[in-house]
Structure formats: C-alpha cells, structure tokens
Length: 358
Image (cartoon, rainbow, N blue to C red; front, side):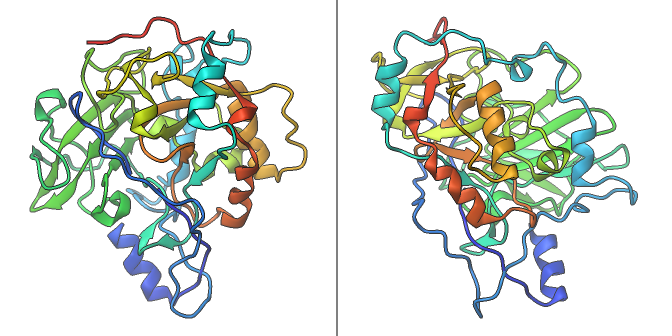
C-alpha cells in the first residue's frame, strides 16, 4: 500500500523482480493497523532514474495466452451480485455528515498503488492469473509474529497458486497472495502468506466462486478483515486500458473510525465503538454526482466515474482514504497523486441499512 515514481534498470534485474513478486484479518480483534504517509512518494532508485514494476501483463502466463488482462475478460460475479450494483441513485444515510466529519472532511484520496517500487516492493496488491493447467498446492495455516492463525475461518487447500506468485510487500505487512483462475472463474486469496516447501503458509485463506452470488459464512473473515474478496475491489490497470471500472473500490480508514459491525455484503467485524459517527465494514462512500471531473486526466476520470457509480467500500483497517489497487508499469504515479484533490467532503455515505453486530 504505497507510492513511488518509475525507474529503469537493466533487463536482468527486471526479470529477477518479476520472479520475486497493508491491513488485517481474523476474528473480531484482527485489525493490524498499517499507517502509511501519503506525503512520501519517493521511489526506490539508485541513480535517480525510473523504476520497473511487477505489473508485467505476462505474469502468471500458463500457456502463452493467459495474461493479467485475461482477468478482465471474464464475468466477475453475476450482474446481480452486490459488488456489481450501481449505487448512483441510492439514498444518503442519515448519519452521512457525522461519519464524513469523523473521517476528516479535508482528507484527500490516496492511491495506494502505482508503478515502480516503494521500500523495495511493488506498489499495491499484486495478483496472478492462471488457467486449468495450474497445479494445486497445499496451504498450511499458522500464526506468526505479525498475526494469528485463522484457519478455523478459512477455506482449506489445495489451491492453484504458483509457487512463484507475487506476495504483497514482498512478504512484509499483510502479505496478500491472490490467484485468479480464469478458466474455472474461481478466486483464491491468502493473508499473511509465505511460500514454504511445496506449498504456502498463511494466517487465513478464502475461495470465491466468481460464477455465483455467494458470500462467506456469516461472522467469518477472509483475506480481508471485512470478510470480502480483495481482487474484485482492486483498481487494475487493464481496466483502465478497457476504459471502465465496473465495481466499487476497496478503501481503508483508521480503526478508531470503524463501527463494530458490518453491512451486507461484508461478513466480519473488528472491535471498536458503536457511535453514529462510525462507518461499518461494507459501508460505501459515493462521490457526489455534481463533482466536476473535467480537470482530471483520462485515467483519473475513469476512476472518478466509478466512484460516482459504484463508490468506495470499506474493507479493512488502514490509513484514511487509501484506495487499493494492483501494481502495474502503466501507472503514472504523479498523475495518480492528483486524486488527492478529491476530499472526503466531496463524498456522501449511502444508506447503510441494518448493521450486524455480535
């Protein structure tokens, strides 16, 4: 979940980086709060030149035809799934003003993804795309010094995740691993993961059938604290190339601003308060219809149109108004930073409905 500018290295270093390829999961006390500083946007460079990213479209290629962009050619959940719902006409929640003021009206959006690297890691949550030929490998659940073992709320392996699949943060922080099986339209996600031996270790794992309208067991976490899938909520560069984002975007706020509860389709909570100024997991913010996007780049206008139609969905604990996306060499980090001009005051909270608690 960070930021940088691009730089160029020798080809063999790019190959090494491609082969190597923040907030929390678990029970109600899960919620490791990773606080990023949006003001720091300096890339990792040795010579001041531009940096490569782990967003190569061929990553995860199984037969010379599957690329990262292949994930945009499948239907990600049926049209009636809540994550595909247009919320542009939904009513505003009665507590919208209180919630937005509590988050901070002058807080701007921050794109926690981009090109290049930050502190040695690609910027964003990476994913790999696979097909029928991908071997399934075992997943062992364990806790470590970062977070606990949530195997009792996880889907068991084996999973079709390549042993060289990219790990968020190169294994530091949330260390998410995501594999999208485009042939079978299945999604596999790990949290706090590490590749060990002939498989993976993780604190939790979740499987989502992208062909069905189905959800996690009520009260269960996923690879995200809210019990939601991660991949369908990421900003992905191949979507920009297609010209449209057709889903809500994953975002985070501080734990102190999150309600101890969740709204559909979220399935999990973290401990906290229950005041009217707090936003539960699954809650959505919608960019106001009259917000003028004409002064933004074509790329940012695609993102902003999605925020008017599908909104932001609270999915995890983290820094305020950080939007999650996948790393890709196509991102212009300076341009993405322009979205910081969009403030919390430019949003409204859509009607939350029933908030589920313990």
